[in-house]
Length: 114
Length: 111
Image 1 (cartoon, rainbow over the protein chains, first blue to last red):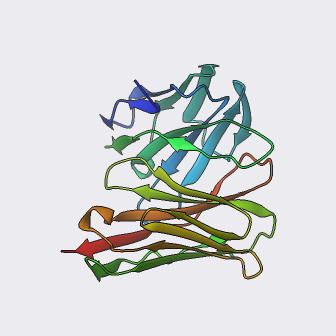
Image 2: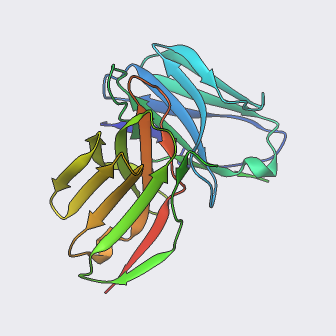
Image 3: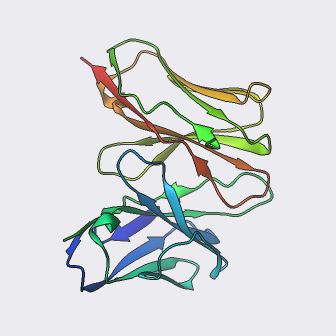
């Protein structure tokens, strides 16, 4: 595996279900991110983990719960979602330096909440 | 006012045309500028990465940054149908963690 991988690629869930999205980066980076991408909206940053510590939580509802057990893996745990949470969820990673912060994205998980 | 403004299009041009995609921004702290290409139902792919003002060329793609005008551009020469995608601009300040994205421009190259 190379780059950033995400599973599952597609997920359909009911509002009462609990599911998890998984992301793995094979780039040796020290930061990982969750983004939400909805139609006709800019990418929305949800969470940032730097060296496995959460450094940003952009007022995301508590029904989204991130977990970063190590620098290569990132999870997004989902429970009691709403239909408006249907979107493409993207994971990204980067190597934080004093310069720019090139982020590399995974293919995303297309989530549909019924 | 949004930090980054990008015309969402859609933009449709014939094959072989020169395409110009643009973003404007308001935060003068931005130092690094990126263009991502996103095909339908895929994740964004980093296309171009530039620091500060100036031009950068990579094959048929040229990225331009004008910090005095807070304006960045991506030019695609000899456009191909395979260039049809959504193009997102993104930018960040020195040592910052949070990339700020434009809305993305949907581009179609017609054979």
